[in-house]
Image (cartoon, rainbow, N blue to C red; front, side):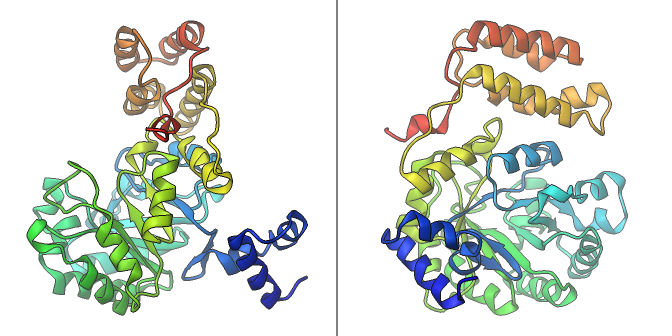
Length: 373
């Protein structure tokens, strides 16, 4: 085994492009521990790729697909602290973890400190690798009640809550938030320091305010400012509009973030993570995936969705993905409508056979298409 000092030296050489393949192979097993990022005891590779938690999207089947395509860290769908405490079955099911999903975090939201503390203790029993606090959800029914991004209107409460959860659990605690409530209160640079002082292990920043919701373009300037702040020593994860390999590379190169979190762009395109990783590692674009390969992936997705659900629920759960999986295919509107109306595996499989036969030779919609634009 090579020494820690030798590994650190070789990591720097790899970064500078001044080492051979044999040396890279020698250090590969130890590389993440010295060249990557750490969230508490969780070790991730350099330039980590993270799947964002998304309500009704990042369930276990979708997470496992993304894991196959190279995700380094994943989260549960966000869960309400009050529902956790009341032991609502649907909520508790969201926190269940498949062994292959690690490293994995459970994301909580709420407005009461006592509820967040108690729910974090319950979540810990499901053996995640970390607990994430959602201070960024902009949805009206959550934010206007003081939870999610609504916490950005009460920073003292937000900081007290974070410190209380950090103290209550033995797991690393992370936070996901936004630039601020609106354009007049972009407080993230100061808030990042305050959150770090509470003891969090990492901070994810979405490059929009709550008022913007998901409109307009994400502003990464303040994310970069947080990362370049000499007082900040925890990992900074950037989030917002990363939908292609080139955008991911720009986020790392221009703003210096430790990791990028990808959300909406991965819906129906879990292979986006493979495209991004390949581009980061080689500077080359992968050839676009063909629709026939996409059809096979959809079949696998449905099969996983059916493991713990009745047939009709499994089919309906796929509708949010059908709208995106075959995005951009010519003359596809009628087939898309039929997919969205299907109620059985038989109906879906017949439609997938048709898609493979008629469009299988075409390239699937790919984030790589936007690289050269």
